[in-house]
Length: 189
Image (cartoon, rainbow, N blue to C red; front, side):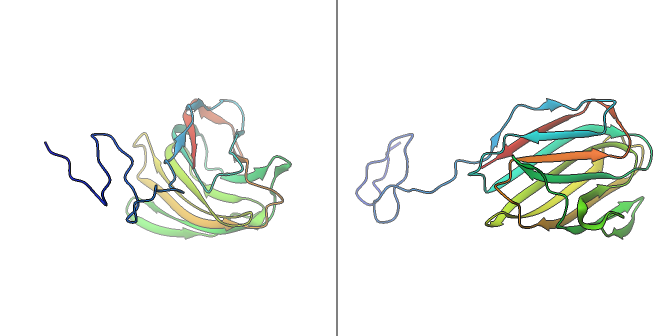
């Protein structure tokens, strides 16, 4: 197969394409850098993923088979190297249970954390963070029951503003202990 020349630049089977003017392309993100999945601890009610680099603009966390028993709040806080932020969460979620949709504002502590779900079960999910500007972050998430025990899905969006420093950690907690050693993985670019 013959290779065509583009802007008088030779192309090979594996190449970096030039910009339209022939210059090298710069400033392109190479994609999400996924970290090794970690096993969630059982018989504890909090878990933190850390090590987010200060250059991160987008952060994603995936989880599967994470379980807690009882209808209790499962929530999230973000933090810096100085600790977790305990104010300024602005968001809510909608959920579907057996084909009926409901909406839910943040749980009773209000803006001190972001509630993700309230229901018992074994869950799969994803939360994505995008840096708005400075140390202000927008987030959205999706959660679905993994074991088919109920037809429950949750999704929501929100923002947390005015972090004291760059985002470096995300904490997940529940008001009862996790009962199943599911997995979580962190990615960023």
